[in-house]
Image (cartoon, rainbow, N blue to C red; front, side):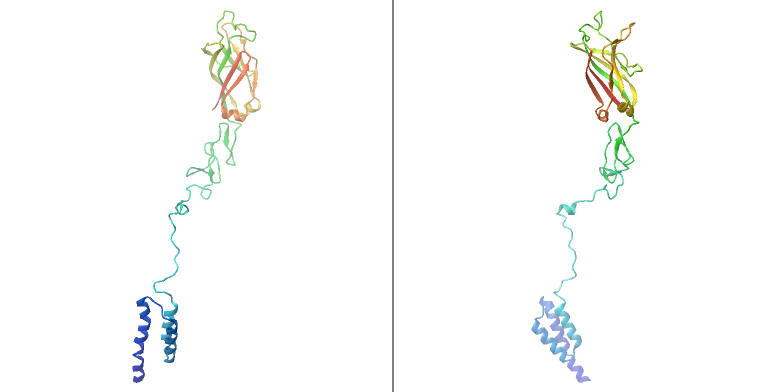
Length: 263
């Protein structure tokens, strides 16, 4: 038993030197040398030593570990791009810049995270979160300016005494009238008349029924004197976007301008 022990003692340091030397010098064991050492160890009954040598051969180079995913390359634009603060992923309404809005107002209408839309004057944000014509919107229609010819259709002065007429605009068949105009310019070949009064209509009435306009001269103590025929106007949805509308060639009125204001 003691003899067997004495034989094993010197062999262990030799195998340890064989295992450590390649690690200290940063090299692998030569394959033929490894096979020779394994065979010798097996003959001597050193199974544990065989496992140590196999590990030395198959564990790979010193210092290598498990694969680690490379960090993102921050020099590339894709790695620098940040996720938008408002998008279809996080906004059921509409996006006004980076802020999610409910999407139900005329000022910011829309859904599904799309960009908000501002509805035009005669529109509202509908149940489907889209801008749609609002037939119930209330509008002031006012005659604001007219260019009046210096003479009537027959070439004569409007008044026998040669004074300038005082034009007014009559709305509708109910004979609603605007205030008498103040003539602010008398340069030939026209006078410029201005007003600042109008009447209320719904958008539905303006686009379906329409309204009438006619220009008269109102002289104190005398009946109204016609300066233009009665003209019937029906508006389009585009007119509510334009808002200032000018009509040309109305007999004694060379032009007449009206404006639309939502109430």
